[in-house]
Image 1 (spheres, rainbow, N blue to C red):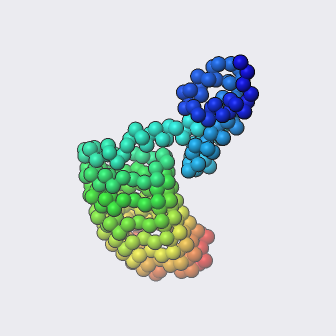
Image 2: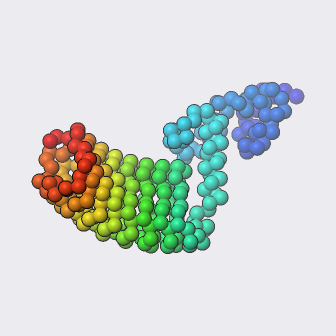
Image 3: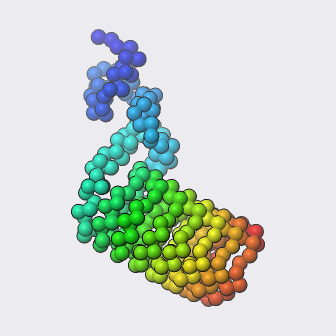
Length: 265
């Protein structure tokens, strides 16, 4: 029996990946279509219209649509397997949770149950917000949220008093809440590559801060309170719109790296 290519394309559209593979073993014609990039591009376009194909290409460095399809299935399986909102609340002894480089669009509120968590890596996802329940993670020492789509930081970030490292680079943040000043144990703060126009004066309360990354924003001034960060040794302020630097920067006696290039000084 002979099927034309159009018919085979239609057949493939109703099969899962295992069935597709089995059909490709029937004869050479089926196999050729199975390996046709256009087939996989068509299936993806019809079945996964909400998936950001360009983001998958970029993150996983793949261009072949058959492999892009497989990656989509893998990611969907991961999310289904993890079933975060049902499973995560039982992991009360968890100390390190790494969900880096998935296609997560939200984090379940049940994450607040992980009261012993010390390291949380949520980099390279599609997150637009963080649930307020994160305030319960009082033992958290490292929070990584780089490369997401966050537009704001919740005020309850100030509850994470044991936080030592906070990474928020490459998001869409426009402001930082003054409550960040409560993170008195913070040693590293990375806010690079956002849309920040100002930094709250409360940043001066971060007396243990050693590294501060504020490059590639839209900052027009730096609060004088930055002079209180007496153990700061690395400060990146390049690629902003700064016209002057507060005199109080003279107090940063331990500073050994200062980037101010590409401003309006």
